[in-house]
Image 1 (cartoon, rainbow, N blue to C red):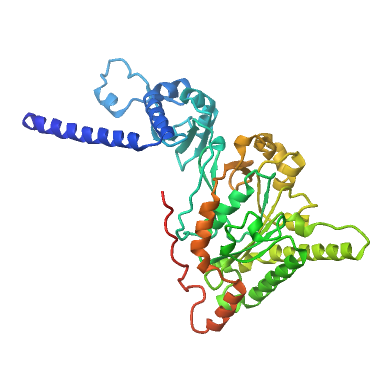
Image 2: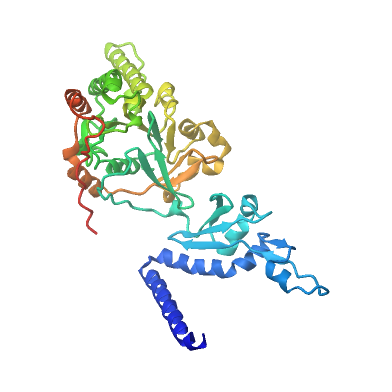
Length: 468
């Protein structure tokens, strides 16, 4: 054994040198925030044993270990009790550290959560959260810089999305990704004051799904007359239809969509073999049809007056509300998703019989508690720290609030900014995938007897990657 000691030492030195080299390379290539977090991670590891004891995250085991039992003398003193400290693994990122720890008897999830404020002070973090990470495990998230006040930018890749029903909204206050499943969702409401970030959030949603031919878009923009004048000027090439603030045109387009819903409902069982399109998923010939209604109050406004023109407009908006109600209440199973966007989602802007059917609601900054309650429900009163009323500072532009399934209370989300140039690039590169769902349905009915309608395998080519 002694003859091989030099070789063993040499191998150990080489391995240690390679490991150190990899650490140095990672450190040099990392951005400034990640470098600070890497240094923070080292301090967390080195100080964990002492900190755990001071924070009450250790347990005393009076039972001797196996080695102590073997070496103990019969008439000698009893072995000293052992102090057990949970093992941890630390991973740094741009905003802070992620610590995965084991639990011990009498040191479980609740004890870690009680110690979170002590950990935040010791690790110099803005906030620390503790969540379960499987049986006998917890994940401790410490953020050094606030993700909510750190603007982020998203550059769409143009690659085919893995799941057209997955909406990647951004990151929460602990920099954890926030995703929402839109499968079997009939409608979404998006509220917020002007300039709070609603348009950028919708731009990201459209750009991420645009490379798939299994998704088609139609937009109503109530604050412009033509697409070139508004927020959808860069995306209109990827939309099979667009309507401005003309109520007659909007009414006609709503009727087209309701007719599409009725046709789909009448043939879905015969064509797809299911009652719900989400059992097989959208396809090129049966695409998910996303209906974007921006400044929705324009199309539902209650006109009051006795003259003929006012009565005509009142009848149009009342019929618009009835038609959109049909889309929201009956369109889910046939692959129609309605997204209603307005500064306030109060009953005078979006009728409650439409708004309250939409299970997903987001709210960017709001000025009043009443507007926040209309967007998120009355329960937001019980969570004042998460209320969108607190997001009026310019640092929170692009931050939204929503209720997440499986999480108590409400989650604040930093949505990334998507530039107009990137939106135009994606729309231009995917414009050939645009198709009217009604014509797709005609083609599907013509080919049903020869092909499997849900497996055409044509989602279109990927868009070239953005230039660095």
